[in-house]
Image (tube, rainbow, N blue to C red; front, side, top):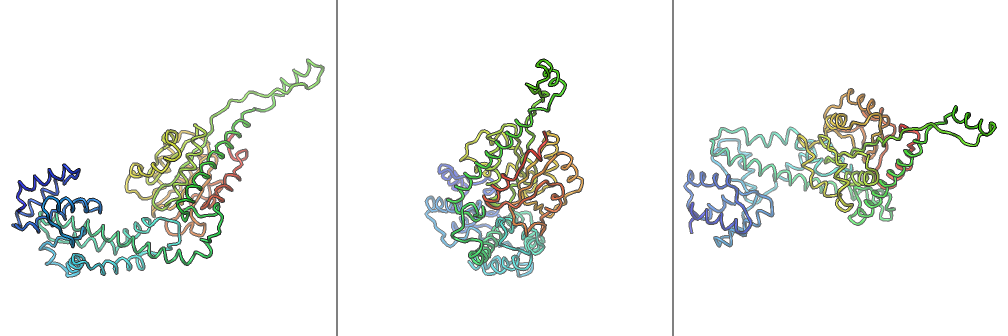
Length: 453
């Protein structure tokens, strides 16, 4: 069987009938390439078509199976990250060409070496810090060495047709390199995690002292339930203060006048009427990559509060602010994690932490004046600037600010952490990495002293 245009159309229909769609742009590139290279063999045609289809593992396996069923053709040795060598690669430095050929032949040693080198020499990484693997990957992707390597694909004198294949090669290389770097990061973290087991991961530790980041799946369920209950408790505590603060002060003149009716005996004390205001409490939670699992506990605390007290406002942020108060009031407790499946909806620009932009948007969105703000975040700002004007505006907007930081205090103000910018305007800044610390934070909050009456 030969892969004619007619046969390709029939195969596309076969794929569609099996709930698999071949992108039109991939088909167009394939037809142009086959014509220009005059490829006639079925094997070469299928290998290049397979190369052009999106390369996640599930799609790869599905497409390979469909090819086998329709053409009775199998290419077990084909790598879904394989690169198509274009003639322009022969005119440049041998390093890129040799690297691509080695990977095509199944040799990933250069990729391993490069990944280890980037981790060891291009960033200063403490893998005991409670941040996600993606956080460290993003730090590496910003290094000059990483960028220079991928830029090799761009520094070519290349035809328009070859440019399409070259860009696909670049994307495949970036994906493969990132995957390898993540594997090496996990290896390094496991090495350091083992070293810390005797002191920080004591098997007999109490559940309430378990670091949120290191909790097992079963422990996490229990801790999330306790965190939800703490949110309820904090809301009730806040509501109780609001009721007490609404009783008003002594109305001295009316009290004396009333006492004259009984011969000067104070039988009844009259209080001045006082308008009851809705609570002015706003809670925001950082859900960026560096917050890892801690943001799940943060949003659970938000849920516990908002579900009890409708006037409390809840926001999440990455590189911009999003209010989720209504969302939290419409979902069930076991659906909290679905918020994170919508992570892309909360990205406003590049998906990296931006406290400056997020708090600027909060100041515009939150209409409350002289209220209280609770922040859950590590203050890591991706090396972006935080202006003194923003700090002043926050201090003017909110009467009290409480900050919960899930990172160990010894790491504050290291790297891209800018906790020192916010601490001067905070009423309290506390480290909260486990349930015990969170419970103590809630217990120590004295609303009578800190909230406006």
